[in-house]
Amino acid sequence: MHASSKLQRRLAKVFTYALLTLFLVPGLAFVFVQHAMGKMNVEILQSVARNIEKDNSLSPAEKQEVLLELKEAPLPSSACGAPPSQEGWTDTDVCKPYSELWQFHVMGQAAQWTLAGGLAVLLAILGLGAAAFVNRRMQYMSFVVGWRLLVATCVAAIFIQGAMLVWLSFWVSAFFLNQYWPQLIAVIGVAVGGGAIYVTSKIFRRVPESEVAGELLQPDDAPALWKRIEVLAKKVGTAPPEHMVAGIDTQFFVTQAPLVVGDNTLKGRILFVSIPLLRILDMTEADGVLAHELAHLRGGDSENSAALGPKLAHYDLYAQMMYESETTRPVYYVLALYRMIVEFAFQRERREREFIADRVAAQTVSAKAIGHSLIKIVAYDAYRTQIEQQLFEYKQKHGKHLGIAQFVAAGLHDYARSESFLTQIQENQAPHPYDSHPPLNERMQNVGCQVAETEYGEIVAQTPAHSWADEIVTAADIEQRLWQIYEQEFSEAHEQYLASRYRPDNAEEEAIVRKYFPPLNFELKGNRRIEVNHVGLVLPDDNPQIPWERVHQIHFEEKTLGGEHMLISHPEKKALGHAKTQVKLGKFKKPGGSEEFHQAVSRYWQRHQAMCAYQAKNADEDKTPTGEE
Image (cartoon, rainbow, N blue to C red; front, side, top):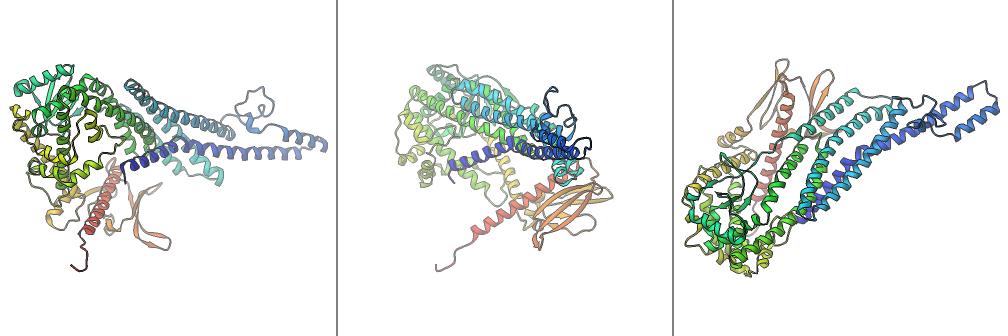
């Protein structure tokens, strides 16, 4: 599926769910209240009419006159909220406080105001989103206002709509069935209360500072490079960075936000340089990249990011936490709708700033330098991504030394001449609304550097005789340390990936799976226990083990007298649906044991599903076509 089509579907989904979050519960409450009050009005009028008919103090003519007046009188519900002086039902107890009619009137008013508030929030989201497209200053103001508004909306939605759900859980069944279920009301009430605490407490969750894998370069570590940056900064028209960090990431960037590097937290104007990229760029090409980054400092891009970045990070963290809890997940979509809209504005502005920085770099150094550097950086990044993807898809555990840097260095030139690279370049030329950088061909046209795609390979193959990486005294040591850490983390992530995909066939694979998915025992009251492992569930009370292959769905129910029960649906079907196994869990010995057990079951069940999908995919890929060779 094309990226833009995926984005459209994602936006449509988020918009639909946001509408449901804002309007579904109050809408249902409003419709129910209107229906119920209509029926209650009829019942009250019929009751009064029967009393009039039974009143022997009135003559038949007087009864007819009173009944006629009753038909023309306002509805009984009109007494709710009416001033005492108003004629009609206000001098009766028909809508006295806390009566049934009074409750329905209050809920109807609450539903109307909630619907109006939802519409106001929706219009505010669209209006603030539109304001973010005006300019950089409006982006900041829009986001600050939107962040505060939507956090308040999330809290209000959980409290108000939660109260509506509790009220509806009683009155819908009581009104239509003349009965209610305290357990249902209690479950909804507990869920709403937990959601209210959760949505409020997460507002104050602190966002960790940005961190980058790298090492600080002191002036003595690279005196020539520092001097060159000072010269370029003067030409660009900005102050030089206060700190320079060297790493192995496939990017250069500047920031004025606090940045954690090792044990240090750097503040001020910071420049990050990639040693592997510096090695493939000649000094003029590298100058173009450095001038580009310094242009971001001059244009205030990094200053703007420093102001807005922490707020974006806090917003995204809060939205993610709302999504992770089932009780607060609906409000996530309201947050996501606004975030998606403003992201279009942010990325459009960032792409324009990239064009400006490219033009400054071309004027400061040369169009050729910035054009060739872009080709080399794109090629290196694409090929390194391809190598890492191949290593990550490897079906066996890696050794201690992966040699990613060596793999990339050995195959980069051939890759840049390959059809796959040119195809990838062509596929990436279509702009995407969420791309922070414009496509390569647009950036090169922007600076006036025209290079045929067939020449890209030769440009990448031009290995510099001397680069700025050679002027960094500590470059080799920094690369060795960072690659060692990076490859260790890569191997651990790959091993964990294997653990979630293996159907263990030997002792080595079994050990990897059990390392990340060990057997977990949960103690139950009554000297009972239940075990969760990668094979399945070991049930209490001498019940047979149930392997994950025999699990279709799992539901948990809280019984009034028997504690918690687990209902396991099996893949095989019977006349009335899936075969089922009910397991009485009762109470857990450890406080919070029930929640830990639920999480373990979910995690191990998801591992089994991912493993089955992976094994099925591999089986399809391993199939060889039959027929004449």
